[in-house]
Length: 399
Length: 208
Image (cartoon, rainbow over all chains, first blue to last red; front, side):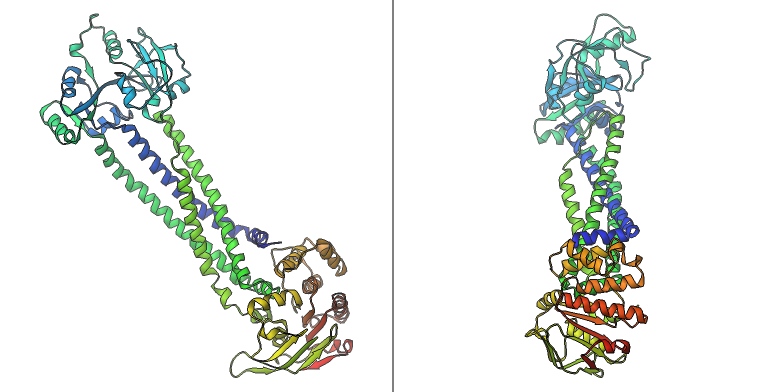
């Protein structure tokens, strides 16, 4: 027999009350943990996907849409721009690098990105197998694409027109051949199929049945991903482009920060609710312990006659609180893990993007310490009657 | 060897008790008789070290327990005193055997399963050793109270009205059990009661 065993048996005796306390506490822990992770993971995922892209130039429309489509590949493009005109921007003295991309086709839901080989470098991706594309209709695929479609080097497939999966308009005349597979980056490129710009242009000429001879003069791209040479570019270029050209220049960091401001309100609201529940569960632990001290005053007095010190009684109450805390923390982690897994799976299905937990141990530690503090606090108030306890009076008071 | 001298106690200014002096040699028994409301339980709690006297001294085997600091008193009480209540108090969430183990744990006495089993057998509680106190009959509960008072082999067994709610047969049985257990642990047995039936069982009596 020891304090730990006695506490467990005490909790087992009042199983309903214990269950309720654990339920409330674990729900709030789970909620806080989940919201914290989601916030962190999504913000990080999006920020990481920017990969230092300072500016996106594309067709006029919503700047957020341009950023979401050209950088994160989770929205439809605003339209196309002339490649010839776009190249002029690339020659501006403030521009460090400018990578054109052309999007608009998919294979089984995975987007095709027509671009230049530098795009893969921009996304900080490296080849796991094979080589980069060197001629038209050769593709390099992201790790998630390779994995979920079970594609290997040398496989061929036909893409479809449009960004959503359908088999109605297949570019079946020009099958694409896999020449390279990228290593996982936990970045958008994992779910992209990358090929050269000419392939995209060819496919659409055939599709539209236009001339055999190809003229690059009139070709279009969806957007230009720009990195500035220095800070001056940020001050000058967007304004110049927006005022003097038919294009629009959007700043990804600025657009995403605006987006986070909206989502932050929602996540903050949930966090406050979770904190409120945590407070309630703190009170519930206190009531549970306080009631134990009052209802079992006879047992506690008895333990004193057994030679148990006051410290022993305090430890007994604390152990009971701690057990509730540990149990709740475990259940809370379980709730959060199940919830996060569900959200991640849903995101993966919708956006074909794999998501991973971020600094989870740190969040666990923080919340664990917080829960511990809550229990120490609840115990500290609950044990007050122990100090005022008159053993003799309790023992001679017959009920 | 137990002796008390000039013990007084008061709960508040108007209400104070004075207790007679007595001396007991080792293994001697004592019956303290008195009507309700004259501080019988208070006297018992003073002897048990649960209350501290206002004046006077209690000496047990040469040690002044009325002068011990709280921590030493806790230890002393746990090892040397066995309190038996009129209505048994036990830990509700523990079984009979677990209650005995818990008693030994808090008294810092090494717990031996064979001793617990032996005592339970002596008190006819072996059949209910895994039952909770709330599942016991009155008689079983009373015997559990005795078991809790003697399992740690105390030097002094203090019983508070152990027989007042019992019929004559059970009264004799309980007194017999208490005496037997006291002899086994070579302890002084002090019974405080208003129950005149057991007067003949003791040679040493003290009227309050």
